[in-house]
Length: 110
Image (cartoon, rainbow, N blue to C red; front, side, top):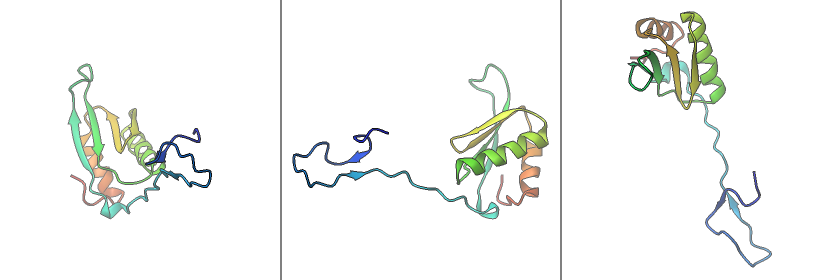
């Protein structure tokens, strides 16, 4: 990252002793499985007629999201991806994904 990127407030100061404030990325802690309120839905629009199952509203780190996504994809035997708080599973696996999430301890899944 450039030394000028991420400055908060002042863009430039002629004062040589001025201390810039930088925007620090926040570390998001992963909520325990029983506290996650995951939502499972089916989507067809904008996907070339293909059906996908989407697991939404995951709160946590990207590594934990990818690990959960890999587990779900492996257990369903299909492909997919995990990014931006969503897990995308190829195909209509809504009931199976909800059952798997309950088995993994995600009790507030709908």
